[in-house]
Image (cartoon, rainbow, N blue to C red; front, side, top):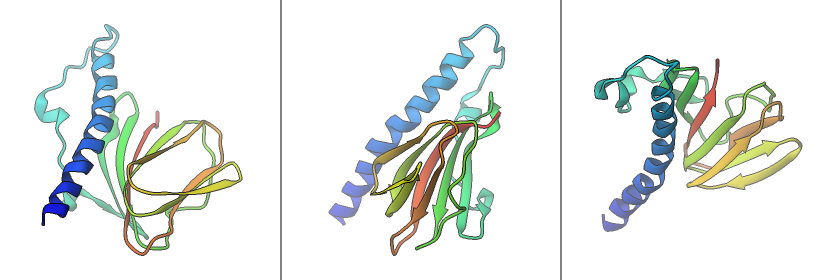
Length: 149
């Protein structure tokens, strides 16, 4: 029991700074005179809801911040079943950050792969060929931050 609570505490210590950085970018955007939108605390707090999660063919996704929340930036939780991936490696104009919460991922970047574990980030530069897949026997859970608009 004690080890389990330590794992939860460690996840909070890792995830909260990551989410804090996302919130700082929102705060900086709010302080920009060009952006007049004001946010309430109710709009800025989003607890995971299984009912609002979107099922995928390999697991599910949950947007903590969708593209309409702040200037196209998104924060998404992706959950992928054992030995599956959401799609093949691909390219697009925007960059992405991945942050592994649970499980074992194999990440791909421009012809190279690496296996990564929880509390590890993976940055995908714009136009890079990149991908992520679950190479473990348990669910893979990771956060994705990108700007979609």
